[in-house]
Length: 327
Image 1 (cartoon, one colour):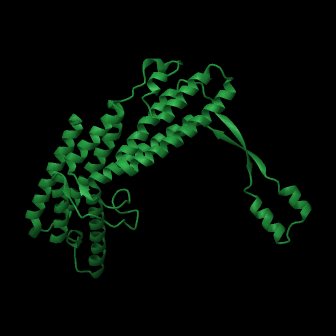
Image 2 (cartoon, helix red, strand yellow; image 1 turned 90 degrees about the horizontal axis):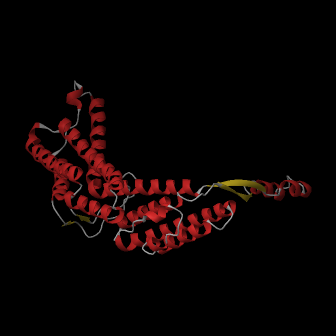
């Protein structure tokens, strides 16, 4: 069940009841901070709170990595989003001010030691210039929390978009690059008198590759090859990760995402903030496919093109249905 912060947590009372339902590190951190807030001098409390929040987020990231290894990336990311949101909401009611830490800066020591060893500096100069400097580093745990939450949400959106349409996006990217190279070659030979005729057309084999991906997206639980080699460059798919070993179909994939958003967040506004960009990425890939096909299909391949366009329409209707109902 979702651990929702009760009304008491919006004040400054101890959140022990709700904390018992949270991830242990988060519950203990928040409980300690609420207890210390009333009995520790504000300056000392701010410093303790900053360090506690940093350690808590480090623990949450470690737990997220373990969840990723056992249950998958979506669960890991939503776990982290959920508890970063709770942590942010709890510390927002506490008076935690920014503070500065004094640190020793040894960055210039490499040149100093090199000059000493090379005979370019005397011992007296080394003793004078070889001491580390003191620098102040600002610590702002609230700003750090916002940054981590933003980064986690962005990764979730990109990676789940990749799960849904990554294979199609990569295939279209490769196809677009091949067509553009062919256009340049054809124009260079002077065979084509006009720009319309100079455009390379999509071959039957390329159309079939696109159609195969679209058919798999319209199906459910279609098993692919057991293992796929990791990609060599970050431009493959949307995230640069290895290809999926299983395709659940677009509708089923979206249903899994929606169900888990509700399970972890139970907040319609936050769910929409994550789901809408994912659906937007999916629709953009479909628009790219339609644009390429409209401009590049040869008359001899018109029937196959119509089949592909029909598949795109079906997939787009599934996206619209999810977007309108959230189911």
